[in-house]
Picture (tube, rainbow, N blue to C red):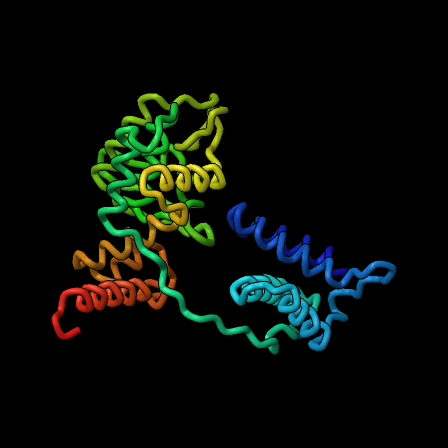
Length: 298
């Protein structure tokens, strides 16, 4: 089996398992680059079972030669490892040589977190039109309130269907990574914003998506990212704010107000507590900054 046939088989399996379109697209992009590396002009690409440790190390070194960040190298290596693991399980490969490739280490970087004041300034500006007036203001405010009020990922946001949200009881059903479902409570401001949006929502017949674009179809994650950046720049002057910034703010503000770390883990849908614990480090960093500013002996 050649490399591209192997990749097609793996991507089809990812889709069958219920992986999101975003996940499949990212894996496809990284694996396409992997296949292209082994297709030099005028030469025949090797079969997938001919890729030994030496060849894979050569490919890995090539990623560094391109000047890619450690994070990008780790992501591409993870995609190739997932491919080889699948092929080993399917009996296509006798051994998974990618297990012998060293994973590059990355420095742990704490997320930059918006303050509660900055977050509310942004949301208030969109609600009052102080950022800038848009015909889709009700929709945009509703999804911004959900991003902050529920701490959901942008992929989870655009995947919300009408029957996923219970405004009377204040609950939202979210499909996270690996198509895992979880229930999260909806804040009062978010409920009110969604109700105002639903009053004017106009979709194509049979369209189940909660958030719609100008054509009455499901809103895409790229458009959400673009709108968040536009609003953030207009309201706060900060162009670095993105949809995930609201998720960071949600977790950090909950923790600062005394929420249990395990509860935050469940709300965020993290598989490991260690992923959630980075917000403890963020809180400690902020506490240290307060101490340095306020204590006379600091």
